[in-house]
Length: 203
Picture 1 (cartoon, helix red, strand yellow):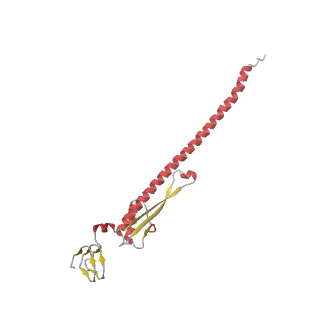
Picture 2 (spheres, rainbow, N blue to C red):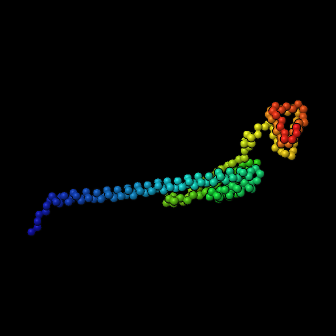
C-alpha cells in the first residue's frame, strides 16, 4: 500500500531548489570578478615595474652623456679627435656605447653635444604586445672664457712671451688697464689709457 506524500516536504523541496541554483550562479559571478580584478591588478603592477625600469635606464643614459661631454670638452677647441675619443671612452665606462655619429662638435670647436637613443626591453609589456620602448638623452658642454675674465681684470691683455703688444692706432681711448707678457709699444697720436700700462718687458 502506497504511503501518501507529505505535501509540506514536497513544497519545501520545490522552493529550495531554485534558491540553490541562484546561490551557485552568484558564486560563479564572484569567481569571474575576482579573476578579472587580479588580471587588472597584475597589469598595473607590470606597468609600474616597466615604467620604473625605463626611468632608471633613462637616468643612467643621461648621467653617462653628461660625463661624456664633460670629458670631451677638456680637449676643445684644440683637438676634436681627442674630444670624441674621450667622450666615447667615458660613456663606455658608464655602460653606454657611444658611436662617432652620436657626437656633434660645433664649427668653432667650442661646443660638444652627445645624443643617444636606447631600446629598453619590457618585462610585462610583452603580454600586451609591446616588447620594448625607446629612451633618449642629450647633453651639451661648451668652452667658456668667463673664468679667465675673472682672473685677469684687463681691458687689453697679451699673453704672448715672444711678440710685443703694439698699439698703433690714433685717438684710441682705452678705459682700463693694459697688460702684456712681453714689450708694450704705443705708436699713435692722442691715445688715452685710463688705467695702468703693465709690461713684463719694456714700455
